[in-house]
Image (tube, rainbow, N blue to C red):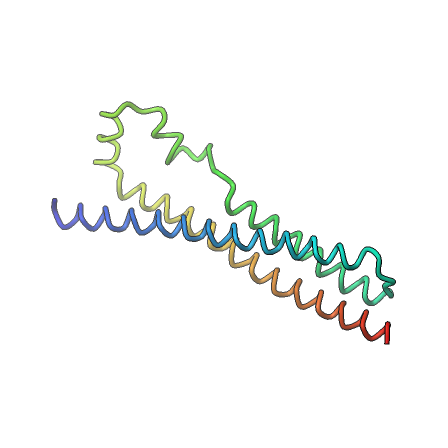
Length: 148
């Protein structure tokens, strides 16, 4: 195996590992956001809330729902992309070998674009979760101040 083939194989494996790592992080964050939304709703639905508390809490909940949407988008399968699984499912074993021999660099580039898109969604979702959590903390402090 030449140095180029070795390098391409290593790059291909690295990109696929990054996609898997990003999907794992997105799944964990999605579970966290879902639990947070459920917990906040359970606590807030029966509590007497003032207008400032409702505004801060509503904004926080809205950001968390938006973060959940971004996370779902980042892990959504792309079956119509023309590369990856749908492509391989339509080829014979000989055609797969020929395609990989010719287009491994193109596959790495395509997978890298997928990884960057997933990472960008994940980063935005983390930012929204942080701001939403801060707003929920503000709402809790406002509610505690009103109760005192």
